[in-house]
Each structure stands twice: as structure tokens, then as C-alpha cells.
Length: 481
Image (cartoon, rainbow, N blue to C red; front, side, top):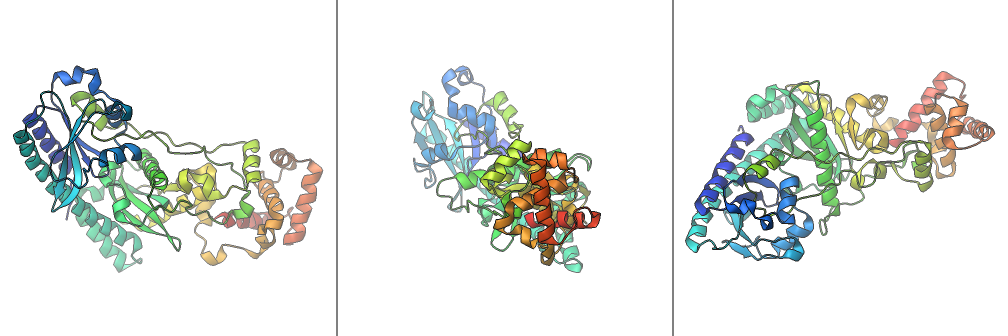
């Protein structure tokens, strides 16, 4: 089953244009999650009317999504249950200066989206709206077909990423290659976002709404949480920018799910062990990373301007980790855990190294998941980490679970010795240079020497010995994971 989502988009555009021409007004198609799908352009004096550019419509053009508040406001008019047109009056206090007409897009009794029209004077007749509802029914059938195709790709991708190496994985790859068609042979990579706030596939964004996405699925993360895997097509294996943009968008989605009222999402995420007492280096990302303005529904977006927006306003840049000794000290004093520092709502994303074709997709997923774990443990890598840039964590994340806590670091990982653990890690990060370490920690050099002697007593290691330093450094870093 080859799913050509570009063809789906073209069909949507034709159908929405048909509604615009039929009614003589601009139309917009959004899915049931109020994500923009297509615009119908129609030249009219409305485009010159300032009242047509109300805040709701403007934000939708720019950001292509609705806020939870505005979505709830529109749904309050019963559009999720309606089987025919719903007129929504203007409400300037809500930012809606022009009335809307909502045509629910349904298939086999299930609402799959909405066509939005600007309500004008003279208004549209019942006969016109009935004709438009017939086109909306064809859109519903198309949305159902796309959903089925996306679900198939999701199953095939999940099978590849969960199959055991060998003939099982080879068969799963062959099935996915057949489903993807020609897209399977180009440069590809995988994005991992974890912890993802829901295991329900219905809560995941449509692949169509993520730039350069080909397929996505949810996978277990740890013992009780979920991750999201996204297959991203690239122009070349040398440039991962599309994957980084997709990861940024997914982190926005994850944060929105955490913050949405009544979402039931697991807010805390994977808080991790608070490695080294949660006092390691890295002060954390700028709060609320990946937050961005979201759009509102029911825009009835018009021709040229709307199509420009459809081409894509890039997602807001993610907040970067704060750096500097002062920031690190503040984070340590607060006892912030690695995961909480990694990104909005305790999520982080990882990107595997690009490959051509699907043969190494299992390895790419391991890389993406490892990069995500590194970003959760070390905020300086996140909130979006690339496998190629996580340094020693490429080796540390490959260690088996039984190697997670080397006995040598055990005494330092107890809450009673949190400050000693932090001192040891900063000292090793500074290549054993006492002056740099003391400055980083904000302590007198004699205090540093005393702490290091206590570290040696507790671990039995000699910090003047290179191999002992390497062992302790790896043990402390591995504890973060």
C-alpha cells in the first residue's frame, strides 16, 4: 500500500477550491485537531476588508494551528456533533470580527475535519450550503483514506523498529519499502521524542502536518512511558536541517499536549535518576522551550497571502541551554533533574545519522533514541540532540543496563555526597585543572583539594591516575542515563 500524501494534498486543494468557486467566498479546510490542510482562494472585495483580518484569522495564517482556548470556543457551538452547516456569530471580544460558517467534514458518522467559510452579507443560501456539504462529504472520504494509509505506514514503521535483527527485521523492512514506494530509496533519518505524553496513536500529529515527515509511530520508552518515532526524508545525507525542524515541531506538540487542560497527559515525564544527585553541569534550557504562538481555526483564509502561509512559516527556534558557571551553580543549588532541564514538559528529541534507504533503519533508531537520552541527561545537548554531536555519550548509551551503575561511583551517588559527586565531575570535565575547577565551582582551591581527597577516600581511586580518572568520569556520566 503506497500512500502518496502529496497526491492527497492536491486532491484536498481541488475540493476546497471547488467549494470556494461554488459559494463565491474563501474557504479553509482543517482537520479535527484544527490543523490547516488547504485553502480555497477566491478573489473578492473581502480581501480588502480590514475586518476580514481579525486576530483569529491572522494567527491561523501565520501559525497554522489553533490554541486550546479558541478551539474550545468554536467547539462550544456544537461543531463536533453537527451533521450540517453551523453558523457562528462574530465575537470581537474573542478576536472573531467576522461570522463563520462551519461545514463539518464527516465520514461514516465520524467528524474528521471542518470547512470554514466567512459569513457575509448577503448570506449564503441553504441550497448553496447543501451543495457545499456534498463536496465536504467527498473530502471526508479522502481524509478517511489518508488516515488509513497513515495508519498502515505507522504499523510498518513500528514493525521495523521493534523487530529482532535478522530475517524478522528484513521482512519488516521489505514491507515498509513496498508501502513507501520510491520514497524508500532516498536519504532518510529518524527522530525520537521522549517521553511522549500519550500512547494513543490518535493523539499523535498527522505526518502531513510535520515538515518532511514520511511516517510516524509510538514506541515504548522505559517501563511505563512512550516515545514518538518520526521517519524524515532528506535531500542529502549531509544536511539534517529538515529533521531538526521536524523535531522542534514535535517538541511543541508534546508540550502542548502536556499543557492542554484535561489532556490526561503524564506531565512529569521521565525525570530520570537525577544523576549525581541531580547536581551535574548544565543549568538547563531556557524555560518553555519550543513554545510558540498557535493559530486559531475557522480562518477562511484567502488566496495569495494564505498560500504563502501554507508554504510554511518555520517553527520557532528552540530555546538553547543556558551556559556558564553561574547558571550551572544555580541549577545545582536548585537540585533540578536532568530531564526537567532538557526541554518543555520534560521532553527531549534526538536525531540519528542520515542513511540512504531503509536497510539500517534499526541502527538509526538506536542512534536517535540514544541522542534523546543524552539530551535528557545533559541539557547542553538539547532540547534537540544529534547523534553525531553527543561525544562520549555515543559509547555510554550503548552500555547494557547492568553496567548502569559501576560500584566505584556508588558512594558518590548517595544524597549525602551530592556535592562531592558534583565536584568530581566538574574536576574531570575541566581535565583535572584545579584553577579552572575552583573557579567553576566558586570555591577556594584548598576547599577543592579537600573535596577531591574525600572523593579518593570514598571510591578508592587515585585521581592522578589516568585510568582511574576515566573510570570515574564514565561512571558519573553513565549515572545520568
